[in-house]
Length: 160
Ligand code: FES
Image (cartoon, rainbow, N blue to C red; front, side):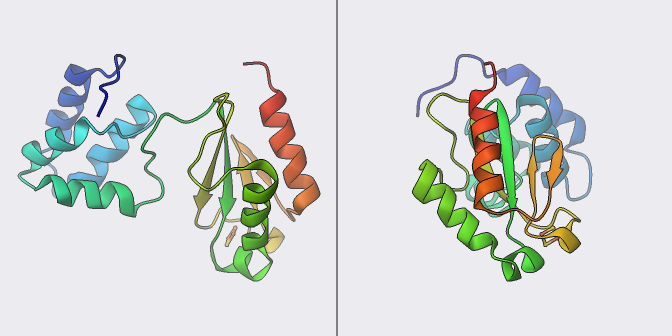
């Protein structure tokens, strides 16, 4: 695996060391790392494993299980599509398919120009207006393909 030049190993080690004493430190550590770097770099997995006396596979398993953890740097904008129950009942999976078919974007992917990442989320607290999405900090309800296309266009058209 190629090592990213901007990965700050010392900063990561410091964050891990500062939280490793907690009971159930894994999630707080991973959240703190994502907060600092914007994603969970592959290189932190052995550091976390060693500090918490776990296997790399255990740490990797948690990172891949929780959809909140990003494995790569996000694009400039992040569009989160809710795939939880209420939104499912209102057709969110068709919107996910639309994103793939019309925009070539599967969940977790970033456009080649780095402007937009799309990501699944599991309830945005906006169930009454499902299907729901979040573009950066902007909550959007009653999403349909037209609104979705508009959100993608806005994100991709934004000044980089
Ligand atoms: S289930 Fe989608 S906002 Fe709650």
